[in-house]
Length: 279
Ligand code: ADP
Ligand code: MG
Image: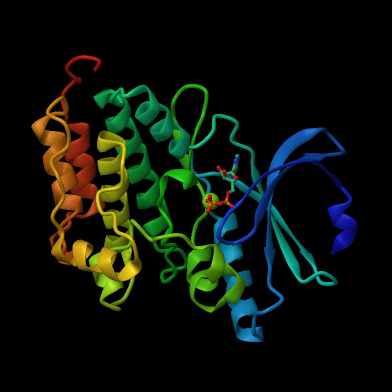
C-alpha cells in the first residue's frame, strides 16, 4: 500500500532498464539507503500478476553473500506499480568495469575474472537449488549490468527471475529490450529455458570480461540467432590461461547437455592455479 511508500524518501534516479526504473531511496526511520525498482503491472492479466507475486516471493528467500539482498516489496494499487526494495550496491556494475578497460585498452586481470566466475557460480548454485522440493529460480537475465561489485571486488548477482514474467507478455518491456546478446541457442530455437541456459549466459559474460566485447554480435536478432546457433567464438587473449579458456568453451557448448553442471565447474574453477601476472 502507498502508506508504506511514504516510509521512504527518494534520493535519486539511478537508471531505467528493461523492466522499470531503479531509484536510490532512504528509509526515513533509520536513514538506511536502499534501491527500489518500480515495475508497472498495469498491462498484465490476473494470471500474470499472480505469477509476478509468486516470483517476487521466491526472491525473498534468496539469501546468499553473492546475491543482491531483497528486502521488501510494496504494492501501489492506485498506480498499478510494484516496488521491489533491495540492497544498494555502491560499487557499480560489471558493465562499467568492461567499459573502463575497453577505454583504457587494458585487460581485466585473470584473478579478477576467475573471482567473478567463481562467485557467480556460487550464486547460481544457490538459486538453482530447489525450494519446497519443486521451485527453482532461474536467473534468465545474466548480463554485466546485473552483476554488482563491492569495495573489495566481490560480486553480487541481482535481478533474478523477473524476466520470465516480464519479457514475453509485457508490451512496455518489449520496447526497452536491447539485443539479447547472451541468449542461448536453445532459447533462439524456442526450446525451454533451464539451468543450462543460465550457464550459457555466464559463459558469454566471462568471455566478454576477457575480450571486452560480447562474444556474439549482430545488427539484428535474426543475424544474431544465426551466429549463436553456429556457436563459434574467437579465442580470448593469450594472456589468459588455457584452463580458463577451456572452462569458457565448455560453458559455450551449443548443446545444453554438454555444458558441465555447476558442481563440476566449481571443481575446475577452484582448481585453477594462482594467476600468472597482471596484464
Ligand atoms: P538493466 O539491468 O536492464 O540495466 P535495471 O533497471 O535493472 O536495468 O537497472 C538500472 C540501473 O540501476 C543500472 O545502471 C543498474 O546498474 C542500477 N542498479 C540496479 N540495481 C541496483 C542496486 N541494487 N544497487 C545499485 N545499482 C543498481
Ligand atoms: Mg538490472
